[in-house]
Image (cartoon, rainbow, N blue to C red; front, side):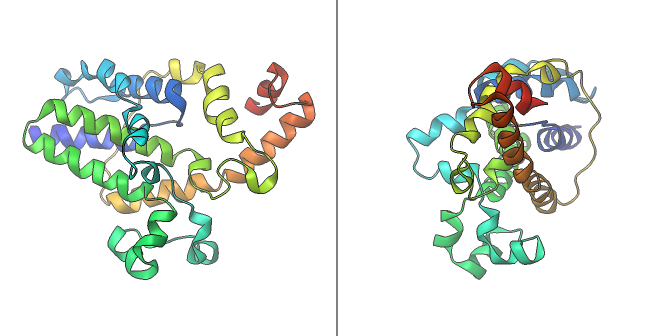
Length: 240
């Protein structure tokens, strides 16, 4: 039962998240994740409040841990092989062997930080360390969410390269905070077994990188409609 329980929970942690983002988005998504817990996990429903409370712990650590920041992003477009073939090596050791550790760290370690959080959570379940497990589950949810935010997967993370500075906050925090209804109304869903964790992480990162241009184009569209990037008209257009 324990093995089944932590497998189910890990699937939920990796697969449920809708979007990332800002404290409000992270908190609400983490809280709602408990609605998809399996009936085999009746005692874990009480985690909902704690998962929400600790959903942004990883962000808060950036101010005291100089290594934390790089765990929240990966600049895929700085990898020549990604631009050529649409993929990079999936394990940390293999990518470091190709590019060197300095290059890899300077371009973000999000997929591998996600895997470490997964392994840490799994070990806590095996040892029945429930409080530590909850904290690692919160971190895992945060990193997975970051991997679903396209601007965490590009070197043009805040629109500097295209003259759209500030789009990161406008999109992930301001817009999501304004349009929380789809998250708040989430009522649960089914999960499926993930057989290859590394492959799964890289696949959703690749998939979400495809939306970088969509966000940047939406920002230009909304700015054209509203004549600014701060009004209700702008955010209505950006959301639509």
